[in-house]
Image (cartoon, rainbow, N blue to C red; front, side, top):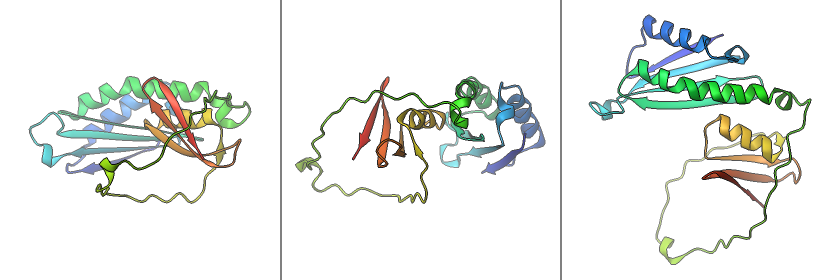
Amino acid sequence: MQVTFTGRGLEITEAMKDFITEKLEKIPYIESATHINCEIGQEIAHKGTEKDFYIRLLITLPKAAVRMKKEGPEVYSLLDEMLPSIQKKLVQYKENSKKWEGSEQWPEAKVEEEQVDTSVSAVYANYVPKIKRKNITEMQPMSVSEAIERMELLDKSFFVFKDILTNSIAVVSKKGGSYELIST
């Protein structure tokens, strides 16, 4: 298991590296990971608050990735708080391994149709948003179920993908306990 450590605003000690590596090695199915990026940072702007430190993990798997970030007052306890969620996501990945490999199909998700009015309200007439552009160069077509699974593993609230059934760009998002599919 290859782990890359990055420090932001603090020096990562050998004791920190050993502690994190030892904890990660105890997680079931972590051996599936091809690489792990661990970023540990200290937020100077938050000094003296409950968000002094953060740990950001990116666990790269053969067909997906698991990402998680946790903020808090102390580095060592942050990792302990993250472990159950990481373990749950890796178990979820492993349970769907045949689907990720392509030997089983992702189940078809039931999609309820809904028409949405996209007219601009007068309330937003003078609003000017700040925009960050992200370019996606290549998209592998996937089912709605696979898109939901990837969104969950990445700990995101939405996921943009190319729908395998319609060959068009779609977005799946999490709304409370259910999911919403937006397609053209």
